[in-house]
Structure formats: C-alpha cells, structure tokens
Length: 224
Image (cartoon, rainbow, N blue to C red; front, side):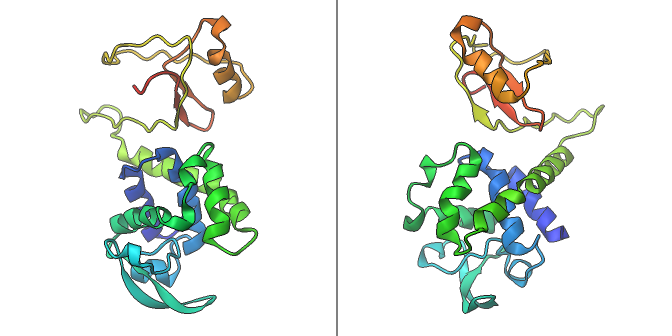
C-alpha cells in the first residue's frame, strides 16, 4: 500500500458522507482502480477511481489527457484528496447511476449495482469484493490511529455506526450522556442471530449497541 493511499484512507475516515457504511466498499473499489495508489492517475492527478471527465465534475476537477489501458481519453484531475472524495460521490450522483440509494443495504449491494455501469469487466464486482477485507482492515487501522492513546486527556472520537436497527423492545436513554458501558458477550453464532433475538418482541430484551466480531458497530435503537 502506497503512502499516498494511506493518506487517502485517513482523509476518507475523517470525511462525513451520506452513508458511512459505504466507505469500506468504495475504498476497496479505489484499491482496485488505483493499484493501491500506484497508478500515475492517482499519483499525478489524485484520481484513485479511474474517473473519466464529465461536465458535471467541473466543480471538483479539471480535464486532463491520460493514456489508460483502453486508450487515450480525458480523465478527472483533482487538486487534493478531499476533492477526489467529494468528486467521486458527485460522479455517482449522475444519471447513469440513478437508483443507487435503493441498493445500499448491505453495502455489497452498492458495488453490485454500480459495478456493471462503472466498468465493462464482467469480473469487476467480484474483484472489488475480494478487496473488501483489505479495505476494512485499512480503515480500521487509520481510525484507531485517530483515537488518542489511553491515559491522555484528549476526548476519543465517537466510532462510526454501520447500521441502525429499530428493535420493538428498545428503551430510549432520552438523549442522556453515556457514563457507563456494559459489554455483554453473547454465544450467538453470528451477529445476525443477536439481531434477530433483539427484533423478537417476545424476547423483551434489547441493547443500545451491538458489536460484531469484525468490529462493526450497529445501533439497536434510535440514532444515539
């Protein structure tokens, strides 16, 4: 992984986007498109997504001639990492990808929807999904790096919530500040088993948050 791509991951981790749970799958896409930040398009033009120039991108990028594997064409040139992130999501807002918001749960459905439009490679989606564990690990690593070490007086950043699941048994804390955290280990085989248990009205139990084995955090009630 190049230092430049690590900086992109750090920037992305701190950037607010409409659907935070899509960060991992889109970062996996950028790993593929940029060769982990090694492509000239990434190094010279901050374009980690192989984004070709479109007029709708003028607020975030400028056109530049670039020789890719499929020939010479105009691509987006970004001035910094932040503009690339914003520009990527503007690119996805265009008409060819209309309906993507209806295909975001689970996050893998997002790339399954946009992938065939984004690239002509019939294996494109599977290539991106194969890189998803690497993207998750990278984002987790840079997010941990953003948190202060134990014993400091600096406040820790709130970790991102991957998904909100409304339980019929949920008891609100009425916006009160969390002062104590109790972690309860469940013997359920996977996180979905725990979710199903909390969604069962007959169980009469719930939790504010569920933590998956891979570190994903899900909220079991209103947006805390």
